[in-house]
Every structure is written in structure tokens, then in C-alpha cells.
Image (cartoon, rainbow, N blue to C red):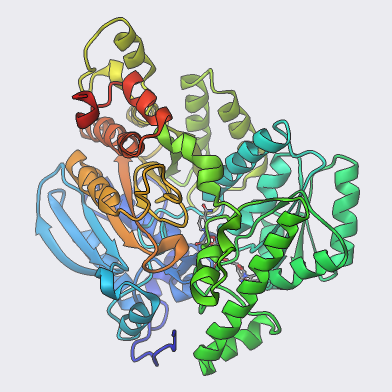
Length: 593
Ligand code: NAD
């Protein structure tokens, strides 16, 4: 099924210039011909900062084998191209390798990226691994290959929001006294313990790789570690009884931990998982092996590895189902573990617990809301603190956002380039007022019709222009966003009109991002749920204080979240139809009814 071909290509030895950089260059002097190219160079190196990426010496950023470049030669070539790239040129990157450079125009993207895409009939891990072994393709995950990863800080707010939404639905808005059990403390999953404690709850997280637990403890994402499940349960129960926030990483395989909990009659309040189950060969660890033993098995006998990995996953999903039956709230956290065991172990009841998007996130997507993120290219944390003030000033009514900014300032350490994430959407309050008063559609670029995202991006641009922020700021987002992804086991699971697998939407989103003038645009296959299971896109806009940046920001941050509104309105979601009406978004067939 997944017998891994012998690689006749390897990524080579880490580049000397990467060793010199050890992260993004910072400050106000640039190596490239303009800030747009410089931003790409800095973001690529930020992904590969040892404090940001999980295994940068292998070019791996996060999420199993999500890479930033195909090989170290390709990395060096991308760096050289970015330094030479003119303000009216566009660089093409195919699965982490630079393959062309054309004269386009100043308003066009500077970099276009396509990662891991295969033609439908060939779109599976087997073909991917064959082509990867020949050095022809790279796994771009989501933000790894699009140079938008900012470390665990990038996912923390999404995890925090998801748990807050869960708490709203099941526990009166708070996780005090509740125990959340999960697995995986990697690049993304590592955010879970902190997101739980920020919601005042208790987290027990299984992780097979002790080094990953240590990393989360060092960076303040997890409080303690143990090898002893009894000890973890005892401390977690005590903390929950006392209403204290507490987190512990348990050095154990997640499937074994869930069975251990069931054997002991311990039932948590919430059960989920963020091991890299989307990739049975290079992401998930089978039970019965240490990490070193499993890594060796993978090298020597990948077929056996995959079989054992899927067997463990089946036990893991059964554990989640049994814990749900015993009374816990269960949800899948975007790693396709249900899809894996349904497809490969014929577990027909695997989808008896929901994915997190239909359960908690879709209403936000209907309003074009998603994880908007920005990074200070200066490297100066003060620049992000100034943007924190700006977002709070701009949205005085958003209490949850204010709470988030306070918590982030207190508890989230910067990794690499100082960055921040918050969920902003399409809402155009002023345009809504105008509509209510009988006005026509607000013209694009009309100050009255600005979306939340555009308003904030324009404010940052002004702060850069005024010198209140030292150097340009890059605004980008996760691929998991309102209108940027087709992923039937995750973002588009159980769509109201059954359009889950239709991938026209992300393609339109990428094309629209180019038309609107984003500075980097990318389209990927795979990502968090594995090859063949999703298509998704990303964009970056560089806010350098110029009028051109303002023009791009106004357009991109209208059209991009606008795709979320029209995609969900088209699928028949009332919240999206209402948002379209409030904000005068054109939905052609509906407008004509
Ligand atoms: P990662 O590869 O950096 O980390 C995965 C971790 O799981 C590793 O530390 C690994 O040691 C551990 N692990 C693997 N198998 C295990 C097992 N059986 N028991 C215990 N630990 C095990 O990946 P990541 O970036 O943290 O992402 C985790 C998963 O979540 C991926 O499938 C990813 O695609 C998905 N994801 C979800 C979201 C989301 O929004 N929910 C976002 C990004 C990624």
C-alpha cells in the first residue's frame, strides 16, 4: 500500500548561508531589491529558524514532513533568485524549487508557489512518495511550503478559540474544573496545553517524543512532564477539583494512554488528538516502539511500519469512541485520523465523533472570519506591541479579542520574527449602516466598505508610513481559512449542500488573490490531512507604508475573506447569506432571485 521507494534523491547537507542566518534577517537594511522580495526571503528563513521550525536541518518546518524548500540546493537557489528579483518580476516555485522568473508588473505577486499538487487519479501518498524519492515533488503542508509558518504561536489563538467555542457550547463558557485529554505536542499540537490553561482548564497530552515535551515546557506551552500515567491522572484530577489551570505532557503513545485511562475507569471531560495521523509513515508513531526504534523500522521496512502505524491508529480511534461513549465530548482536531482508519482499517464508525470545523468553526467561516496573522520584519517586539494596541483601538467592541491580546502578551513567547494572530473577518460595519439606510453597494476601496481585515491592515500600513513601526510588516494567514480550502474531512466536512470535495473554490481563491495583487500566492495539495485529501491556498501582503501597499491591502483583504462569505452563501448557510446582505457582497445568482 505504501511501500516507500528507495530515495535516489536526498536533500543534501544544510546550506552554509542557512547556518549563518539561523533565522530571518532583521532590521531595516535589506539584501533584496525591494521589501516585497526581502519579505519573502525573511519569511522563508523564519520558517527555518531553529526556534520556529521543528527540524530545520532537514528543511522540515512542522506537520510530519512539511518542508519550506525541496533540497538545500533549492533553498540556496531560491535565496539567490529573491536577491536578484526586480520589482516587476515574478518568481515561480514548484514544490520547493525555483523553476522560472518572468517579467510581470509591479502590482503582480512577486512569488507564486505550487506545492505537492498531483492530478486527481494519481493524487495519493503512493504516487507522491514515488515522485518525492525521485526529487520531483515536496510536501508543503500548509504554511511550511508557503513560508507563512510562525511557530506554535501561529496556531495558539485558533486552538484557544476552538476550546472557548467548545466551552461556550458545553460548559457555560469556561473550562474551569474540566480535563481535556489529547495527543501530540508537535509544531501545532504543542499549542493545546496552553490553549486549555488559557481557558482555565486542565490538559493531559500524550507524546512519544520526550524532546517535544521538553520543548513545549521550555517555551511555556506545557507545565510538567511525566512517564507515569497514574501520576498524570492524579495531578490532573486534583487540579481540576481545585479549579486550577494545569497541563502535563505524558511520555507515552496516545493509543496506549487512552486504553490505560479506560482500564482505570478514568473519563475526561473532553477528548481529542493532534498527533500527525494524516501521514501514517512519517507523522504517526506505532505503539510498542521507542521513537528511535520506530525511526529505524521506517528506514528498514516501511511496509511493516505503515501497517503497525495504522493498527495503532485504529486502537487510538476506538479509544476516543469508547471515551466518548463513557460521557466525554469528543472531536477530531484536523489530523484526519478518522479518515485514515475508515479507509485503511474499514472502521465504518470512525466518523461517529465530529471534526472541529463543523462542530465549532463553521459559523466563523460564514462571516469570512479566519486566522489573520502578521509578522514584524524588523524583528523588534515593540512593533508587534504597537499593532496589539492598534487592533484593540480599532475594534473596541470585541471583548474576546481584547482578552486574547492580553493573554498573548502575558503568556505567548515570540518565536523567530515577532508575530501575532487574531481572527478577523469580512464584517464592514459602516457598509452595513449604509445598506440599512438604503444606500447602494459600497465601492471596493471605498473607506466605508472596508472589511475588518482591510481596516486593520491599512492601520498597520499607516503606522509603518508614520515610522511608529520600524520596518514593514507582513500580513498573511493560515491555509485553514474561510474561503481558501476544500478538505472533506476537515474544513469542508459535512457542508450543507454536500459540496465538501469541490476544489474549484480554493483555485478561485488563489486566482483572485493574484488578481487582487497579493505579494506571495500559493496553492497546495495535502496539508494537515494528507495527500489527496485537501487543496488550499495562502497569501502574503507586505505593508511597507506605501500607497501601493495600501491599495493591495484594501483589495486582498476584501476579496480573500469575501471568498469565505460567498463560498458558504453558495452552500446555503444562513449566517453567510446574512453576512453577504449586511456587507453588500455580490452573490450573483442569489442577487437575481
Ligand atoms: P508534528 O509532526 O510537528 O507533531 C506531531 C507530534 O505527534 C510529534 O511530536 C509526534 O512525536 C507525535 N506523535 C505521533 N504519533 C504519536 C502517537 N501515536 N502517540 C503520541 N504522540 C505521537 O505535527 P503538528 O504540526 O503538531 O500537527 C499535528 C497534526 O495536526 C497534523 O496531522 C497536522 O496536519 C494537524 N493540524 C491541525 C491543525 C488544526 O488547525 N487543527 C493545524 C495544523 C495541523
